Length: 306
Image 1 (tube, one colour):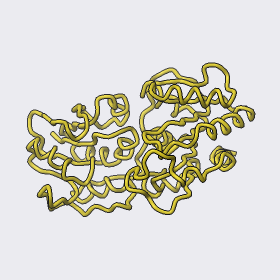
Image 2 (cartoon, helix red, strand yellow; image 1 turned 60 degrees about the vertical axis):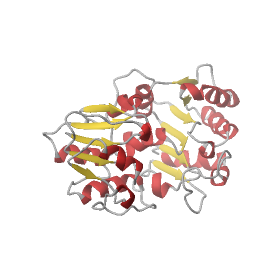
Image 3 (cartoon, one colour; image 1 turned 30 degrees about the vertical axis):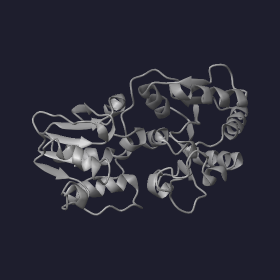
């Protein structure tokens, strides 16, 4: 059995797809188990490479598998906590970035400025597994959702990555006036934010929606356009080739953005360097505040086919 750790969120999982598929191709006869949050299972199923989900809740979890894995692959981080979590599963081999604190020295060195997709491809390449960093496509869920909508997703995990609701509303209002069928999406916890944007834009009743993960993936796959911050749904647009405009704040698109050779995906960033995590705390990041509705509308027009 091959055990892979990626106990993070939607965007993190999407960025690890090429590495996971490379591993699947290299070990076709082995069971491939992915240690990840159980709520990600509908998305994991769309990768088409994972045989088993081992539910974990962050690095405080205990990963139990039977038998012990032949290889444990750390696609979670640089260690030592994530390394130790996998070491506790007693694998015959640990594939991971070098970390002296975890007493793991045979892996490659960590590069903090590396794009997230290429980082994990480079890790498995180090151990002799071939990957294709462009292999990001996910299967489309068989869920009935509207097609051809323009999605605006105002939420993000941290406040520093949330563009102001009033600016999203201004963009939604203009697109609606131009004939777009605009939907404002969010998780159940983000419903009030989605409703605020929809109301501010003067959208019809029902324009603000909460979705399951499968519904969200299906909606993005069939959408006309996505506008969002630097969060998981932007990676779904990349996976499905859906035109997108992604607004970056603390993090540079060089690290987390869509592939630069795909003109239908537009990244807007007015920063000069990536912050470590969301280091600036509760406020919206200055690079994000520098983005105007007019700029987003211009990039939206450029992202759509002529």
